[in-house]
Image (cartoon, rainbow, N blue to C red):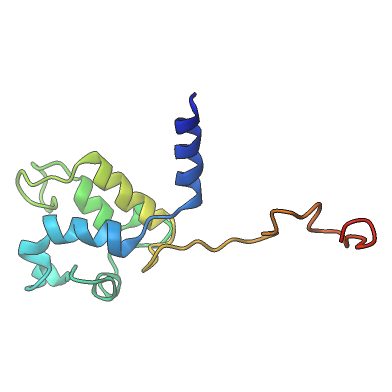
Length: 133
């Protein structure tokens, strides 16, 4: 694996999916005719609050989410979304699944727990400042 591959893996672990810049644009371009202005099926995807109030997303569990179920249905099945041949590609489906599994947050979460001092010797122990100022 080259350096680029390692950087890509590390960066994908460091950053979560951002609803506004990554998920909402998918809804805007693929779901807009039915679910942005007129809320077809009582689902309005025009913003995060409307989506989450519809109870179609189970944060942390894409498999149990109605939204995910609808976007992975075959075009021949009833209730497939988007209907007809306007399918989402696998990258878009995977991104939505990842966003749901990460907690379906309204914005990217970069919460870091634990020691964040890159110069620390050991975050758990007191450091003797006589030796390590």
